[in-house]
Length: 409
Image (cartoon, rainbow, N blue to C red):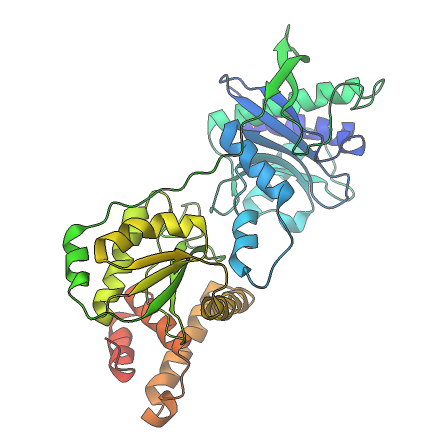
């Protein structure tokens, strides 16, 4: 069985070979992995920034690669989408990095291996580490035997390709820059202990499907009895701040169904879920529960994209609300920009404990404010505080006091 030492050994061979000097990250090729799966390899580093082997395993891996390579630049009108796509990578990476980019544990492992083998770290991108990227998950050191074997195989194939590039160009070897017109890429497989080109791998079609929830009929029936209250603009978003429920767990980027009243700035206080696809029923139940707490029923729901429409369709049918799709949702855009800025400002605030301390100071300020001062509080902030209380972020005593002070339902 391959070990972390094997990965370090091949990483230093990779560093010495420097295949990124002859390949671009769009020069994709396929590799047959030890478990029989097809992996797609991207060699990064020619641009001088991120030096790595990226292994995108199977259809899901390749589609995440395509998303990264074709995504547009940041868009103020869609502040969450760009970051969700960045967080949507599904791959394994052998990365050559500077010391500051490694955790202490990763640094200690690299240093210990180098010490045993007489290796001296020098220059930029001198330290190897091995990372798993998963959709809506924080990058995390690889740990499984399957991941180790797969990444080692990708590195072996890349080194074999590097030898071929000494006498031939990538184009002469059949490697083409990725674009929408390419449907096959060269495939490398092990033959007599060495990776060679044996044919081509057909690329999967970029078909995206979205899950629809099973609506709780009892909850829906209760919502149907409530008074009708206007149109609400909605979008499923991935929040760009990682959460970790338990020490040692891979941190995740939670999902939220944002919903804002059209013609106003009231934001519905829904709750975060860990896994959009796995927790789709829970997300729908939180959404209906938020209307129950407000004691209103939406007359119409407007989804900003197809993913949100698919989620809302059975909900709208169950509660007798209209449903349309539109990207022109100014109130939702304003709320998202405010929310997004607040998240990023919090992430720049010096660590999670500092953020939490600042939050507690804000709560103390609220408790000391007069009713006249609180009357000017933005509805988005009021809704955000309500969400903090409902998600159990605040201590119970403080949550009850703030809820009473703000007269939250």
